[in-house]
Length: 307
Length: 263
Image (cartoon, rainbow over all chains, first blue to last red; front, side, top):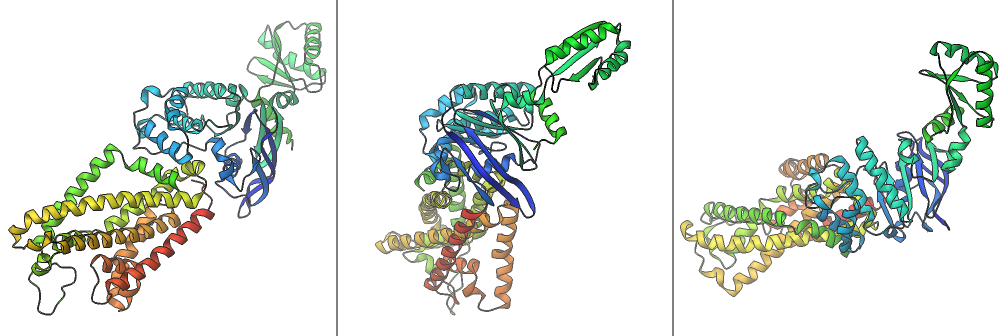
């Protein structure tokens, strides 16, 4: 990764008194696959719209591929983007839609079969866009974004509205695109979507940045969890008392106790809890260290109000 | 601008669109010619009868293409609705957002689209004029309209002039429609405002206020299509419409360039 693909400096967009994006300062390294996380209405789409020249910032600065966001004509030919639901012409077929986009962007129309193949729509390329399922529309939107062989891909909620199979397909597709060495910025409010392929993360809430950095560090910061279960479920309360006596907090998850390992080496803590349970006559049926996922890390960040 | 022009043409020059356009041209031209010829009356001693054709005017060299111009003049609302739809629908559907991601130079995008639509309209009008002329010539004997002078050199000159007037008239409507579409960004709203203004509102004001015919864009466009009316000559109508068209184009360009595209 050399250089910066996207950089913003105190980027702000206000609608009246409400700040949709508030003093956002982030950097996405070239070649990174960056996840942009936040609940609905957090400001993800507005940020992306500013990066793409569709919305004017109220204040602050930004660059995309080294060019200022006030001059989108200097960089958009190297950027592929899908913002919100793909908006294409329903009476046109996939090929016709892509032909319009290719002509508008000055791209080579001979790439149309290639990008349709990448998104798996070759067999349906002569069907009208209006007759496509939501998943197929999303895939055609991504095909459109890939037409110019972009250095940077900006995808806003690409799996929105898809069924589980469609979401899995979309994850695989983005994973394949990321492997081609492009910089990718993907927004989502479904954290499990991003977990598998993003190596860089931005967390935004109410327009303000909560976290920016590597995904692994984000998860690691959240701390590990120890999961315990007694062989006799009736002993779960007694097990909770043992955990409390060790100065730790335990939460219950069905027949399991979940203990946060904040500030502890997780394996050593697991061994300590095992010994404590045994000395109290509790036989453990299960004991393992759980690596936090993005979702649990995010929820803990919100709980702790990390800024 | 050339990229936007070519992209728009890619949407317009398709088999389905051309088939529908051919059908529309045939219905418009043949049906319209029959209606205009059937409504022809003897000239009144007092002079002009407004937009109504007379046997005498239809028998002149430009009679064949006068039929075409008269049919067009009664289609103002239709032309306006089509152009408002074409411009506002892109906002409602979110496709301007898609287009701006490929052509971020907004004025070039708007101008390219407009020119492509007008080029397509120009081709359709040319076809309509030819079909109307042929249909009118074939039907004229049945309506006691003489067509002897239609094939003269003067007839060709009048055909060119009538075509130019109708194309100018369509361009005027297109620019007004583009402005309304860009300002309101909603098909139903743009249609409601545009039709209400150019339709009943202007005509009501015309009845109540004499100078309205010389000032309001919809009435001026009607005057252009009619080849001039008693209150406004053709040249004055063309000059006034040109002013409105340029103003509408400028307003649309400035608003489109400055406004956030969020839909």
